[in-house]
Image (cartoon, rainbow, N blue to C red; front, side):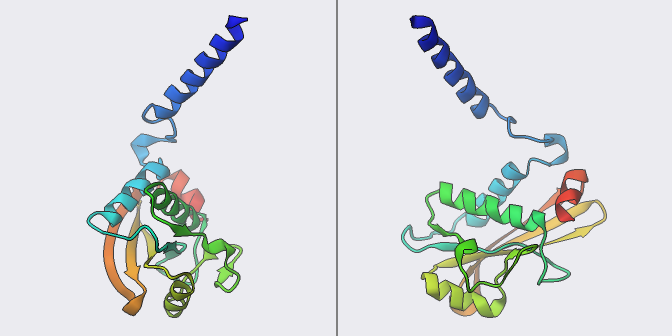
Length: 175
């Protein structure tokens, strides 16, 4: 009778230890392919020194291609999801934009907030800030720029820039 209980405890503890171990979610740390960790750190950098209220939400728009601000990619959508997750896990209220019908959204692009829409969407959700971002590639590097924008007057509260190696993983997400 005791073996199943002890076995279940052992399996639970082994799973918890595996999840807590560094690098478990890593695809390829050496090439910077652990996008979750990299994007969580970038979000932390964006939020460093920023005081946001817990009650009012923050919106996170899909990152767009710097060369064509009306286009994004799987990478742009994935980075936005990581940012929203990190903010939410830090106790910041994040509104899920994909549920908003009036938002400019294309199936292949994601939730894009054009300059003229930031104010309207923010007011509709009483948002205190919006995270927007762009990416562009050059040679073997992908550059990402994030901004935390106050809807009133489109004022930049904070910004954070980072780079990723343009490896096969990142190239695949850009297609």
